[in-house]
Image (tube, rainbow, N blue to C red; front, side, top):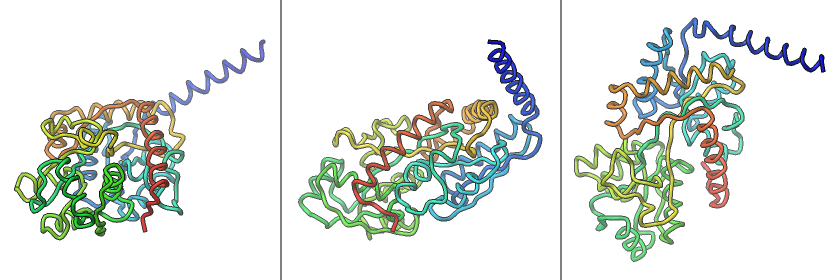
Length: 321
């Protein structure tokens, strides 16, 4: 009995020492890795977060763009970093829930090699068509595609991208056939859909909504399970195709085995930063819906999505090649 008490006291003492060891965190600048090029929605979100985190934590938060390999280069850099809270990552559903199923030689594990800190935002993912398509809603698009099999071309940022997976899921759920035209990135996919080289595109609202407002693309629906709070008048695909869903999220990660007290502190700081009115307005303007979740809630979402998309990708035989 006394040995058990002694072990418990030692454990409590070590826990107390660990908390004291992190009491001065942070005492130097923090690096926030963005695994994509500057200028995109992830980069805008990261820079807005970094500015506010720096004010809250009292140390500069430096954004470092390490693009390449569908987000794997920057993500792998964080996976291999020390779990001391000074190297963090803005990751996404694609880097952590999809890439491990799409790529046979991943340099990291999307779930096991990271510490989920905060789920920060959901991206409005849209279904748009070129105005040449005689469809004003999802039902009419399905009818037109069935009457014209393989006539419609849909663009994507490449095989295995969220654009590609969104379209393949749509084809499977509705029984239609379209022709896939892959590009090297989302920007050229949007450009060619505007130019009517391709007619259908599933893409983040950050890329499509400016063209919708200009009348160059027609917005039919969003791909999340429910309507977006940012586009309340736009139906979800699921209202016409029950069960259809593909959501895109961004989250704050650290390397695996980060101390729990640092995770909780960073979660609170990130959630507070994203509630600053100027940050929310900036996110609303680019079609990014700010959310606040605990590390435990984020961990559950990450694991569920990794299982779901891993299963779907395997069943459909999708690869990134």
